[in-house]
Amino acid sequence: MRGALDTLGARRLAHGVRAIEDGALVARLAAERVCCDTCPTSNVMLRVVPSMASHPLPSLVAAGACLRLWHGKHSRVVRSG
View 1 (tube, rainbow, N blue to C red):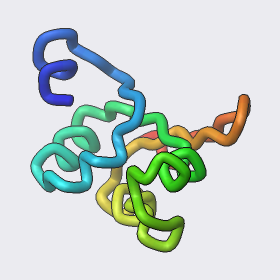
View 2 (view 1 turned 90 degrees about the vertical axis):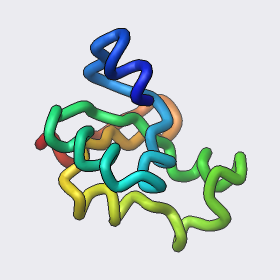
View 3 (view 1 turned 135 degrees about the vertical axis):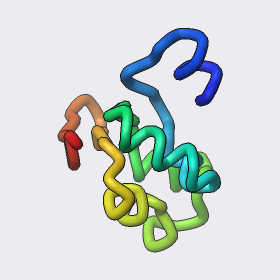
């Protein structure tokens, strides 16, 4: 993700849920208002996270991250910063 931010100047990232593993990165995403797209159902199905209960979505929202939730063809911004 840092490469996309630093080299490309990305303002929106797909599949950013693993950012939770790096507190400094989450803080940067929130501070720079970079929105991460995520599909919690897909994250569980693809075993990015073991279960919906352990999904990092609540922690990312609490940290001030901007998230766009996807379900099928539909999306919703959870926090826009």
